[in-house]
Image (cartoon, rainbow, N blue to C red; front, side, top):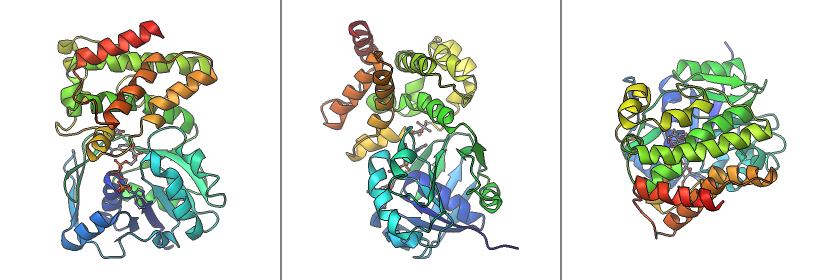
Amino acid sequence: MSKPPRIAIFGAGSVGCYLGGRLLAAGADVVMIGRDRLASLFRNQPLRVSDYRGVDSSLTLTDGQYTTDPAAVAGADLVLLTVKSAATEDAGQALAPHLAPGTAVISLQNGISNADRLKPLLPEPVVLSGMVPFNVLQHSPGHFHQGTEGDLMAAQHSAITPAMEDAFARAGLPLIQQSDMRSVLWSKLLLNLNNPINALSGLPLKAELSQRAYRLSLAMAQRETLALLRAAGIPTVKLAAVPMPLVPWVMALPDWLFRRLAQAMLSIDPLARSSMWEDLQAGRRTEVDWINGEVVQLARRLVRPAPVNECLVELIREAEAGTLRNLSGEDLLEKLNTASRQG
Ligand SMILES: NC(=O)C1=CN([C@@H]2O[C@H](COP(=O)(O)OP(=O)(O)OC[C@H]3O[C@@H](n4cnc5c(N)ncnc54)[C@H](OP(=O)(O)O)[C@@H]3O)[C@@H](O)[C@H]2O)C=CC1
Ligand SMILES: CC(C)(CO)C(=O)C(=O)O
């Protein structure tokens, strides 16, 4: 049997530790590269990974399995990039000296442009875009929980070998190769338009999505984006219970009907929050420029307006500056309606 692929996970926080733990639990050869706060934690306690289906594994890591040294990526066959979008260039620079030509690098970040931003920094490896559909929450220090469903996806390429696919399949996290990743990324972005709304609400996802005013705000941002995607000739792929163009319609349903029809959606972990909420809490720069900001950029290219997404970018700027917190659904909707009328 051929040697199992060595998988390096660069920027191992919530998504990276979860994937790393699941792959390790299935016997894969994994090294995670991240910050000292997690490296120190794992010297004293196991990495725990769990999911909504009942998976629950605790793994005692060796120093070589979670390290702060970027040189540990040397010799990897596959690198999964799981830093936030603001850290993509720094990560590319840290990876560049250590990767052999042809190494597969999959950006598992949200947004549209991360793989394209990495390519000039990593001209010899094969940089591919990927997508994580599910939510990962750090329930307690060192315990990472997958709260929602979905399959990992990556751009179809021969650099993703059958042995790599096998490692993901054994871990119970199949990696599906997709020929049209641009459509996958934009479709995921349509769901991520909830990230700023969730972050502004200050509520867990389930509580936020239970309130119609927040859902109507999300529907406005999604409709604006869907119109731009149609104008740009970018198709969507189905990542939710209904085709993407119908998602805003579902969001706009009255609470009682939404609760009935969107059972699957509301079955998300009551503690789950968006990654943007976590960024605001930690005082970090959010990914709003790579989510709603991408919609604004697309609108500019098409010489069209995108007032709703522009307004959400501005509100998140205020939240990043610490001048806005816990916005009610009604106040948010009013702000977006005003922006939309003026735009
Ligand atoms: N969390 C989720 O549920 C989901 C997240 N995503 C996407 O996945 C990506 C990762 O998200 P998430 O895991 O939540 O983010 P996290 O912030 O939890 O993890 C990223 C980690 O990378 C570390 N890091 C950044 N730069 C470096 C570096 N140069 N060297 C070593 N470590 C570094 C960060 O440390 P520090 O903070 O100190 O910089 C942080 O610990 C994002 O694009 C996000 O949008 C996609 C789907 C779901
Ligand atoms: C899974 C989802 C959509 C949850 O909000 C996410 O991608 C995120 O938090 O960044």
